[in-house]
Amino acid sequence: MGIKPYILILIIGALLFVDVYLLVRYASWGCTLEELIPFGAFLLIAEGLSVFSIIRFGQMINPFTIYSIFVYIAGFSFLILSDRQMGYEWQFVLMMVFSVAFFIIGGLVSMKTFAFSFKNYIPPLSSRISLAFLLLVFVAGIGVFIMEVGQLGYLPVLNLGNAAVYQDINENDVTPLHNFIVLNSVLPAMFYILYKKKTIHFWQFLALSFVCVFIILNFFSRQIIVLFFFSMLIAYSYYKTIPLLKLFSIGAACIVLFIVLGQLRGSSADEDKEMSVNEFLKDYGDITKPTNIIETYLSLYGAVNFSSGNEIVSTALRDDYVSYGAYSARPLITVLPIDKNAIYPPLYSSYTKIGTYIVDPFLDFRWFGVVALNFLYGFLSMNSFKNYIAKNGEYYIVEWSLFIFCIFMCSFTNFFHMFFVAFFFIVNRLAIK
Image (cartoon, rainbow, N blue to C red; front, side):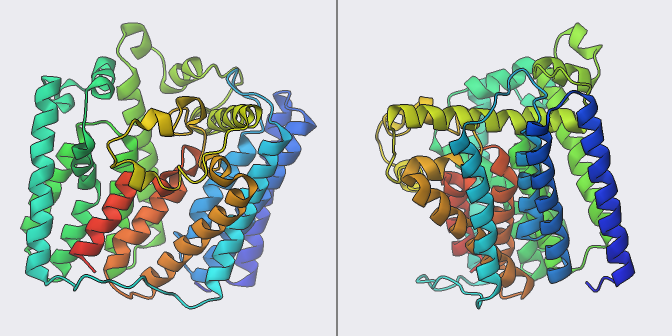
């Protein structure tokens, strides 16, 4: 993507204008210099990272632009907008700085090295055997879906707008087999690959994808839906370039869907329905400032999580708690028939408390974990992206989509070590590579 110098100057000028506007806006709310200075610093890093990577790769979607969202939210979290937020310990601030620095360093090192791929010890499947394998896990997902709906007693999608549905889903007992349901978020991308290989017809791809979408919509999980959008977007753009305007339109549609699903999950009482989405979320998140809907979401689903992370780290330091790699080994430990609460105490769980992705590396190996694991996250995600843009194989469609998802969810928890992500990698490697 060749950007002419005057266009680049206009872009930088526009960003600086927005930066000044935001700083003035938040200063008018009573935010102090201790809040505004780190916010401004992280804001400039996020913008610089995005502009640099877009110019360098000619791609709007790359590891650095996705990670810049986390960097921006990290800076935004210094603004105390909610009563749920708290000031940070110096150790946590240092963790934030080191995490961002070494993720970027890992990505930059990967940019300077050759793209590599882990050796596949299992012979690649033919297109028809690959289809048979994917249909097998597809049918397994339908079976688990029917079983869980039977436990619930009704189809959730037929009870939209009832907050009790989301509560029932969360309280519904599920087994590890639930991962076959979650797998439906990436199966359409895999079926699309088989369609492009002419293994299945277009109408077959649509029919299979319709069932997958119907299943994931019944669980009101925005995380699963985000992964579905990412995987389909990356699959489509692998074969055909998406115009910039259409890309922005897709992004806007995702934001709207995120907000709508949030309202459907949280609105049940008549008085709630009379409130606007923003008012409802501000009341729910104890937000005291005159935020707009985007700022409300950034506070409720971003800044508050950093406060949770700070609390977890403070508690771990107080108790001298170190997990010695347990969080990094989660994909292996999850399948073992042992008490998970004994391995992952809820008191230190960034998954239970939603404490951002930076907590787990620190709990595993303290500062070495913060440096080494963030370097690996940046290095491996950039390597996957390089293989994807070089079109080194359709396998990298889903692999890169999974990395995008993990990076995008950094403000929530560490999905890099979640079992279902590892499970998706395995299915993708068996079916596509």
